[in-house]
Length: 161
Ligand code: THU
Image 1 (cartoon, protein in one colour):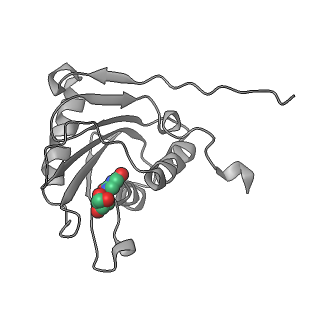
Image 2 (cartoon, rainbow, N blue to C red):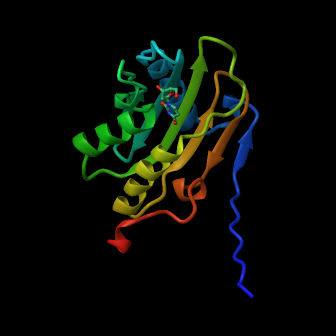
C-alpha cells in the first residue's frame, strides 16, 4: 500500500490593518496606493503589491494588462522582478498584496495566483530566507503566510536542474 504524506500549512488571520506591525501597516498602505495605479482596463480588477527590503526601501508593483491578454503581468511579478533587477543583492523581508474590483467590493483576502507563487518562491530560494506575505481585498481580513512555501508546497526549484 502506498504511504501517505500530509502537508499542513498554518496561516494567521488579522481582522484589520491596525492589528499589523507598524512597518507592515505602512507596507499595506503603500500597496493600496500602488493598486490604484494598476493598468487594468480589461478586468477592472486592480492589484497592488509592495515589497519591503532589508534597506527599508519599498518596491511597488501593480497589474499591467494588455490587449493581447496573456501578455499582461500580475502585480506581484511586476514588483518582484523590479526588486530583482534594481536590488539584486538585497533581501526581501515582506510582501503585501491588496486587490480591488470596480465591479464589486472585495472583502475576501486575495492570495497571489499560482504562477506568481512560483515566481516569488524563486527569490526565497535565491536569498535563502522566507518572505512574510500578507494579503487582503479592498477591505476586511488580512491573511499572513510566513513563507511563500506555505502557499506553494512541493515547489519546483533549482535543485532539480
Ligand atoms: N492579478 C494579479 O495582479 N495578481 C494575482 O495574483 C492574480 C491576478 C491580476 C491579473 C489581471 O490583470 C487581473 O488581476 C485579473 O486576473
